[in-house]
Length: 192
Image 1: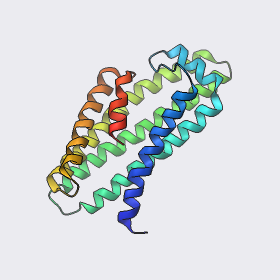
Image 2: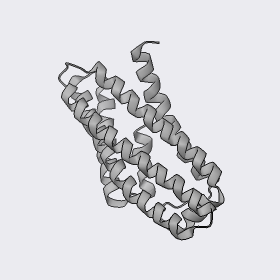
Image 3: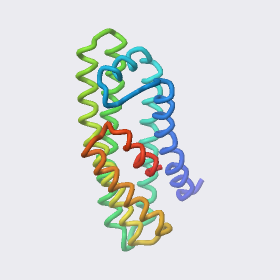
Image 4: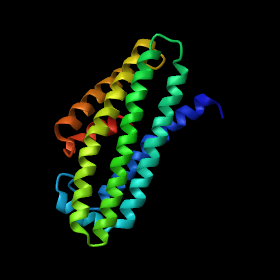
């Protein structure tokens, strides 16, 4: 398998796994409202095993997507957009690492809630949301800068580059303003 093929597969499969993990989670936990701490903790506790599996699948997708962006970055080496891609990848990688911390805290929330430790579960959930807002804002900022690099270098279609920039800006602003908003689904799907 060529590195170009591997990069393409990682950029396709990774985000699909990420979104699929959260979609299946939302479907199986009916009425899940990320802004309702008590309700989310209760649902996570009642479905602890499912929550842990789906969040691990989403995390795997997140890591695969980051690896795909590394591959794209390598194809841009030496070009006019390479420096943008490197800086964007740095933000993207940092945001991914922080978002993995959020996922870890959410798994801890499910574990604590299933053990009847409500106060611990709520504290972990609140910490996950604070960490997640910063991580996703950084992740989306990285996507924006990568999009600028792709636009400058023209190694992908200009419409794709513009979409990366737009989705990244919306995602960064959304995560900073109201991370638990249902409107965050727009940049999430846009980043796929």
